[in-house]
Length: 381
Image (cartoon, rainbow, N blue to C red):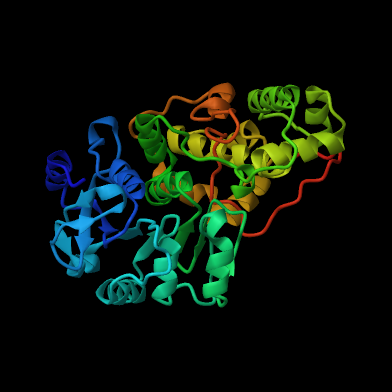
């Protein structure tokens, strides 16, 4: 790791580049380091992505041994954290061995300054060792949750989240969920289009709906016909996103009873039909706000909210902002004001393949499960 290419890219970063610190210490996972480097260490400004300045930060510049016999070469020491906009901590295998004291002290100081801090997979243990998660909500890999709870009882574990935020501290579930969190942090700071650009380059979904539940083994596998029916119904829903849709409508399209459909949908995707469709509506509205000058009522209609008031309510609950504020922050219409069709908005950067490339979600998974009923009322209105 620590390639010449990455060094050259970061040296070319503009003065106003978004500064990201990858915190390194012995035993960190090479996969997580690679994810962080791929998201923030590759220059994609020629494709419209923001300029990033990624630095590999450690207690000193001594090579850092990683899992699997690989080595990372730090290019900055811990003092650089005071300049960082974002600090990211990779996961590690030896979860119970404390990180070096200088690292823990530096993380505490960074949080006091208000710097955004994120930990991937077992990196949550490092934040817990620093005391930064006490009294807060967090997540780690589902296979580590019992150990995490036993050693850190003052932390509220949200077991089914892919990633979660509390007081500007982000934690992610295992391995691939780190990609989800990194792309979400890009989206949060720079908008959905920036995250989509990076995701396309990485050949991955900009984000996935659902929770860790979709990756935990189930005692009874689903029949192929059910999986195919659910994939088809998701495609159908995306094509008709602008229309009123009810669980009963989608169940009928899948050829199932409403109750059976809701059960199978949740088991496969880790989220309810209601939550999934709300995520698609919010994501569609985000893209329209970024790419077009369409009036708010029209965006609400195309995204399937029915009214601007309803759209505003869902933006407030999911993004903690309003549609107008989101447009002001992330609009790209100075480059292009061509309206985006309903169909393209519904399907752009959206994959309907379960698990590995699920359809995107506008925000992190909910901190508490959201129940979707199998009623006949329209979804996400």
